Length: 240
Image 1 (cartoon, rainbow, N blue to C red):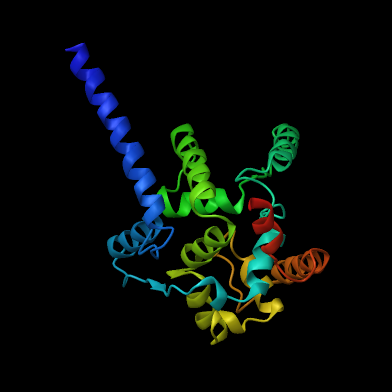
Image 2: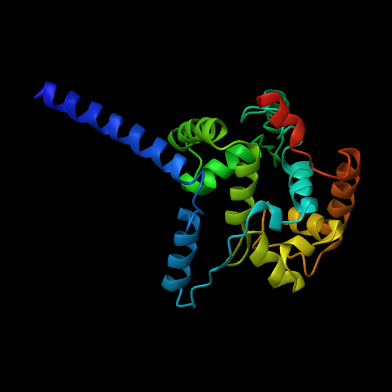
C-alpha cells in the first residue's frame, strides 16, 4: 500500500514538472488566452447576477508604449532588467520595514514582488497568500526567467494584468480610459495607469484623486531618473 502511495506521489510530481515546463515553453510563443483571475472575476459577476465583464486584447510588446513599460518598472520593480526574478535587496528592506510595522496598531506592510513574480502569479497561479502558492510562485518565476527572458515577461505581464473592473492588459485599458491604442499613450497617461495597478478596481486613471495625482508625479520623476526609456539592450548583451 505504501509503495502505491509513493508511486502515485512521484507520478504526480513528475507529471506536474513536465506539464509546467511544457506550458511555460508554449506561452513563450503563444498569447496567454486567459488567467485564473479572469475566470474568477467572471464567476463572481455571474453569481452576483451581473453581466460578465471581460475586456482584453493581446498586442505584441512593440505595440505597447515604452513609457508604460518604463512606468511599471519605475513603480513596481526598478531592478527588473538586472535581477534573475527576485530582488534580494528589496526583500530585505521589506522584511525590516514590516518587522517595525508589526508593532503598530494598524500596520502598513510592504511587499517585494518583482514584475517577474507578479507575471508568474498572474499567468499560472491563483490569488491567495499561503506557503504553497508562494512556493509555486518561486518555481514558476524561475521557469519564466529561464525560458522567456525580460522582453517576453514584460509583454505577458502587460497583456494579462488586471487594470480595472473586467479590464485586462494595456491595450484594453488604453482604449477604455483614454480612447487610444496603448502605443499612443503619453508618459503622463502611462504613469496614471501604473499608479492604479495595486488596486485597479478601486482607482481609475480616468478620474484620478489627489493621491493618484501625487503618485503620478512621483512615478514620472522616477521615470526621468531611470533615463526616460526602458532599454533591454544592456540586459540582452549581458545574456549573450
